[in-house]
Length: 366
Image 1 (cartoon, helix red, strand yellow):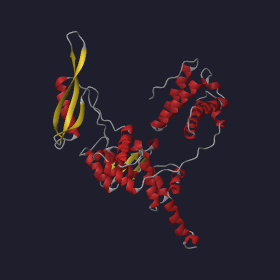
Image 2 (cartoon, one colour; image 1 turned 180 degrees about the vertical axis):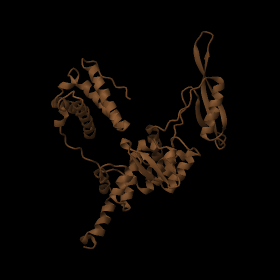
Image 3 (cartoon, helix red, strand yellow; image 1 turned 30 degrees about the horizontal axis):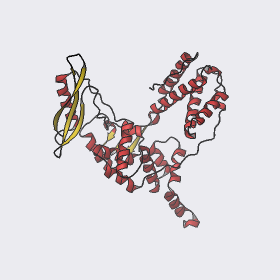
């Protein structure tokens, strides 16, 4: 989890132990992996900043100097607010285990950063993105995002066994391991069935990357036909003892006749005959891969967007359609209604319709 190091100083060994204990504490509390990574990175960064100063001797002024240094480095107010939140959590933990009597971060106050209204795509723009998807998997990713309002990590961790095909819903494991049901529309279900292709278990969106040394499987177009193409490097040695690699390849069959799973199985059978291969392990698509899928489809549609905009679009279009803010909160998996209420401001159409329906001077009944 992260490659950051603590720069050498007299307190580094103790600081390292305290940070790792802090990380384990939050892992046991089922905090999201992204939050834990952020906490760990910030704690290490702060310890590196204070250098020779023992953790137990940190004062509020030391934390303020760190925040001021971040500002000088060009950090945004939102980023600084996140860093301060991580430092508060770190010193709260140190207070809990008795390393400090009172957390020095308690006395640090900072103006709450201004919250920007979320940007949402129009329905027409989303349809353009769907039409621009390069393949059925990419289309299913976009359809599922817009149909359910999932977070990025919730989509990559979505499993087949958590989908109820008859009820058209998916059980999602959200932040803090909290479960919720996400309804899916007919279009999303049809798109997901194509991706699942008869599988009954495992991640819906699987990584296509084979383990290193097992060869690379790709699609190759030859004379207007698509074939599964297996390529690998064969090691050889010259008479002088120098090692070099010869590129090799094999055609496994037509894409229309073989699924990716079948092609992978054929590739494994072939590679076992020429070398020892590593066992394949089930892996979901990475968040970076999904971001690339969204970016490519948006670019082909003449747009510029990222996965979270589809979640914003899901919520905004629900509000514009007259959905209750409490229902939207539950669908998004928000804990605090104030987080959801931002979509009230992002949807002026919904506010206008509410005024016209309810306010006597806008035409509503007194």
